[in-house]
Image (cartoon, rainbow, N blue to C red; front, side, top):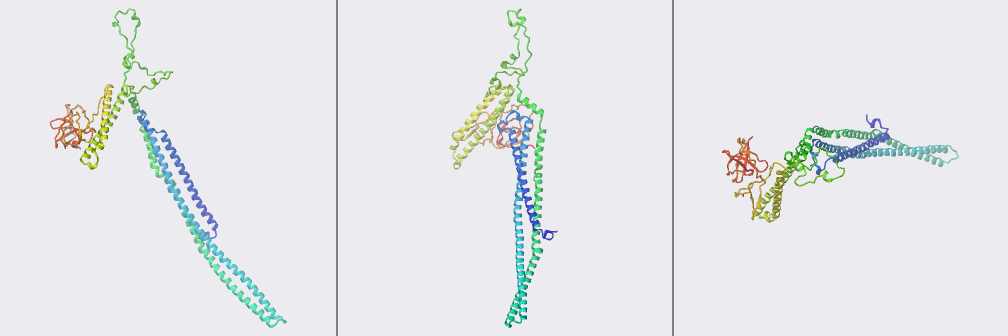
Length: 539
């Protein structure tokens, strides 16, 4: 069944139906566009929500950030941000794969429909023109035939009239004959026009219009198929991101399961443990004995209360639940922050000093590396002047040296404070670099003595203090072996000398300080620069 056969006489219906179908496509495109706007607004609100409740970069070091519950909350915010990204992806894919694609296809269908309708209109106009010619020839034939009949009747009447002359009769007959000839020609023309019209009409109704209607039917069916694909894409676009959305939701679930209330309690203890001892019992002060007290007060000592037990902290209120003063005193709310963290309880002070010391040591490590790199660069410039001017590095070398000295002073200062606080002074002593008058950099061994060996410098900064556990009765088992590439004097305490090509047992790997602990066959142990040897560890 097709439109050309079954709807041959329903041109207006087909025209309205195809127009209505195109309008439905436009309506669906508009619907999807509004859906994408909703998705984009939803994603934007989710992102703003995550941003609102997320911590700022400056707040990431706050104590609360160490709690698993807080970290899980941050993970949820991140997952929500990723979830918002998937909603944006849905909106983008719908816009690209449905709205833009359907709009482009719709324009093509409109142009194609317009072409078919123009063909139908042209065929209709051609048929109407042929019909007008037929009607004109028909009316002319009718008119001429009547004139011929009147001319024939007049000739017959004239012929029967006894008063008519022979010339009148002959003239009337000629006029009747001429009219009959003209009428015959009009008849033939009318028959030809009728034949032409019937042929065109048959072509119009059985060929031209059915072909156009079938083309319009094909156009409409393609429109319906394309629209159906758009309907499916509306669902598939969201299904495509569902696995990722599922992972976001799984991440939120995982964030909830990662909360560890016990660890959070331990973090509270670690962050807030003061290190103070609990106060002892308050002794009984017997004022009645003052009456019979001997002249010497040595027989009755002064009772010691909690304030005496606290020593230098005796002026501090030691009640667990201190009453708030009605008068606002900033000193009671926020203690003065000092560089040595003396305002903190002992335990917290030790932790902060240790943390600060580690930060300074890392910064010092960077400066030492920078100093070594500048020294090597200066050596290269001196050997290859075309690569650069060694004098151009003087300011940087000077600034780096000043920074190293400043940071070493900071390290010594914080080490002293840490020792006062009762902390373990695991201090990092870095290999120093000095620059001679020729611009070459000399390496100081950990004990400060210069090495005169003409061997390459280790590429990493190294420690100068080592663990004093070489005298243990039970020796650690070797974890590999190493071969010396250069001579090393081992002049400083804790190091061991070696000769190029010597094979030693590796006892302890380099922990990032540039030194490796090794042992000879005779049992001698010590540290050597890691960059001086090639190491092979046991599998």
